[in-house]
Image (cartoon, rainbow, N blue to C red; front, side, top):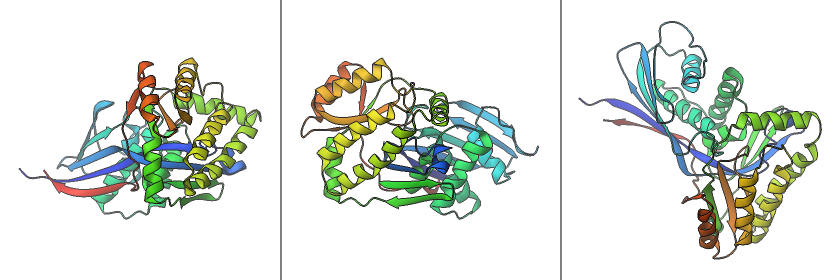
Length: 337
């Protein structure tokens, strides 16, 4: 039997510079600025409508969940809360089966949960015929994830997933502005050639790291480092606009030095060992993508040294991932199965 379905995907992101300044209260008090880009790793969502008043969720990371949709708002209890939040917001009572898959494990530092909820929203709004701009999509994703559910984190992930591409994002108490950073194809390809992404093999609890960062900001012990990271985001974007990959790599190294001052939980001996190994073998600079503590690390390497850096990191147990930059944001489509 042929069924009409809706699918969506949203790209995961690499936080290049300024990450952490998008976290409250810094973003509202001093204004955050983040330079990031999306890559060809995605969170997917598929919706298959059914004739019941029940939703059944299948997640590759969290298993299967089923609940009726006729008893009022669904309660948040840590079980499929992202889907529940979207279902509650749109007051959905029509039954559906949903499958969710992310190409990065939870806690990997590529904006996973935020990318998942953007993907869910993109599929659901297409299904119910609700038109949303990229700004509206990202803002709703942030509201549901951070405010309704209460998951801790910054603002860049939802906007990166919705918009896609290289962007400079400004966060203030008045709202968010996404400014595309237009790089020529030659510069993007050269950066791609010299970029290395590796998985440390260890996930982490970003909420605990972010909470530590927030407490440090309130105590004014990391304010200077956050301020400097904001400045570095602009410098790094400007270096790439000029096609100066070396300068960008050296600035990336400086962003890592500042990021480590955000919280004592940002780095650990394993990360420090991987970082020093990469630098010793031909990386200009790098950083942990996301809150820190584990997950993915991103490096910019010297000319023709990426394969050597990759080989030495693999000896240390890191998993090197092939990727390209993704210029498109969240998208959805209808299909028949």
